[in-house]
Image: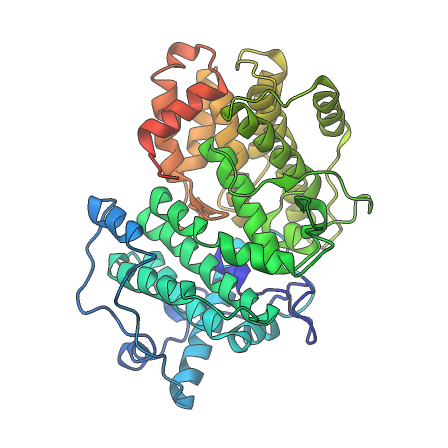
Length: 466
């Protein structure tokens, strides 16, 4: 997930358990270069740069860094508390995140983001400096500057946050720690790729579980964590669940956590974070998590799926309709409806291929592919909302048999700037390689493929350790 989202966590002026997301309404820089940036010499004093410059490019050196992440001996020196330096860092963070958020947010909230940013900066040392590091990395990457010099920062700062906390650590500290770990994992994904990023994401799990345990309504004793309730909870909790669900689906692996995917009792009440940040409806997220769970059971040699459950999912997906409130931006509202409908069609593809195990020649699957292609064409080229179609386009690409559909989807996935190719925590350009492998392998000449064919192509092109 983009740090522009994470920077606006749950501020309402009183409690961190709220999930209102603010957005700055005053004018902001038109380019990253225009954003205020303190001198490098001043900012480098805030967090120590490593002694050397890391030059890593998906090499064994990166894998070694991941393997030593939990035991690294060198930890950054203490962050300076000089008030002038802190003020410079705060201004830099806000200027960058305001600009990035305008490019990446699904829906513009009605309240200012500046307060939310300031709240998160001051809320925790972990989030303050993970936001600063994220702002530095994203600014350089957007301007075409090699980001590999930050690899040492990413791993060492992550190590600092993984140091054992006290048994009585308060929720606010845990939430800040989890937020910082999320940001570090995100940077791992975008700087060093999916394999490294996923290893860092898994490091978030113990802190996530400790924080979730403090909310009995989310995680009752002896029961799984409820997705429907968690999506109304703390921002960092929501962020973990969304990332875990989407990563498991697109990589074809089991999720890190087993979830309770029972629908909530509050009807269609949307999660403000899911609606404003991700664009994925909570009902669709629950269904994707349920399919993940069924696939994980099969991986373990169990046949947990039953016909009643499959019928329920198919019925929900068949009757669900997008809900996007009127924002006063009619063109964008139409595009937002298209994005949410594309998520429904993508969920149908995943349901039929991933849960019912039909191949891509199935007429229902092909109907969903056509819908995703058509919906993609309704969104104006270059619109920031295009990035919210990327994961549905990957799923449609898995099932696409016709060359015209493959070409259209590949164009959507490749014709993007750096910022527009990032969705959730993923750099979608990596998955274009997966689709090419699939299309020239099991799917050569438009041959039908299975979901397992896609997983094999992913394993061949993006190997991960877990």
